[in-house]
Length: 307
Image 1 (cartoon, rainbow, N blue to C red):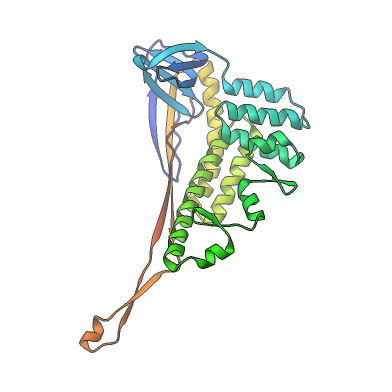
Image 2 (tube, rainbow, N blue to C red; image 1 turned 45 degrees about the horizontal axis):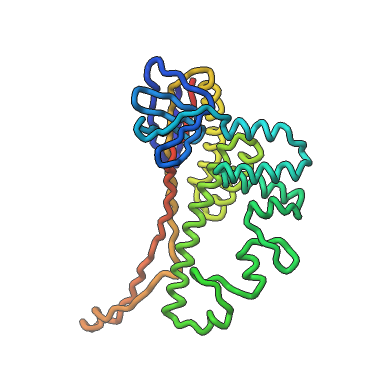
């Protein structure tokens, strides 16, 4: 077995299946609360272990209602993709919609964006992305609001006149909300890009790396640039892992990755103290820099590979 580590921070965990346990291919667990969990299932005593390319999770037997064999999303994804011609935009758009239905919204949206790059008027792809037809063109709901002359300030859309009429306190609150929203956007884009880099579709993997590289330039964060390079290596390791798993190997190496961004808030707050003036000196100006911390902590371990 091999152990891979990420320079931007990861914790590796070695997990081995019980002796004699063999994985079943492409299974679906139905939990007592109605949730469906898909992957390669190993029953080890009173525990069900579900392995997918995104990691491994365990469920006590009393939480499982049913265990049924079913084609996995990824195997069906590969089969559907193999049947599509490169210029079959309708087929690719239908694939995007199907991925969203299967709970793979990040990958489905990325496929829809690829379709629109070649077929800008594809209605199915636009619907997958949540676009609306407005003023004779496809656009996002936010773009539609801007087309109507509205501006987003904090969590509210308003006219320029409404913004101008707000008091200083309300404007400061809106600016704080905007900064918080920007942090959430970066974290969401990091997660989505990392997920794309583990997709079975090479084109989506390339798109994921492209997005991570863009975020690294935008945020000027070296850790993200390193993540892009190392996740590309991880994608290959995951493929090797899945091949070994289907041959009957049951040992896995899992990694949980963490990225932390620190941004200096500007402008830096300054205030004057009259303390020294009471002693005959001039007033002293003090600056209070603030740092905004954005953390990305993956919640699902990633299989690193088997040798």
